[in-house]
Length: 212
Ligand code: TMP
Image (cartoon, rainbow, N blue to C red):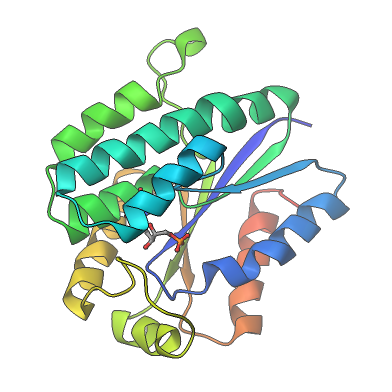
């Protein structure tokens, strides 16, 4: 079976993480080996960077450089080796989150992000084609609903503590990325019951012959 790179995206509180176990189980039931991971993070170095990114105030360029530094280590240490083995890489967030949070939310220059993306995701053996997920599930719901879901859940980190306006900009950052690569993105309406959301996820997989 050929390697597959899946990512999950959405604003904080969209509920994507609560479906990761079920997605992993579905893929394993099909006999796939799953490398489950997350960004920022996924390696000891990248997890240290995650801690700084989520806790410490910093300017948007510093934040973007650290996010891509973490990503580069993650790609080299975990993602590329897993894809080379033929695994399914199931990643909780990837570069679309950078365009959404740093580009949309923070208003940072997306041209600079695109340059960093080209550096970090270059695949020496495949010419100009960058490493990107094969499929991205984008869990979308109104920022107010997401904020209400997060309110009781836990102490907010640096991003979770942002305003509804910030998350509206994040959502529009995701929308731009989805518009630029529509065949990769599947929009999941996350403003539904858990079961209804799962049905959309399962249908997206079925449609692409994944876990069918
Ligand atoms: P998580 O809570 O879903 O694990 O994500 C961690 C936070 O980091 C989340 O608020 C989004 C943010 N983030 C960025 O700002 N830029 C990025 O490139 C990534 C991957 C995450």
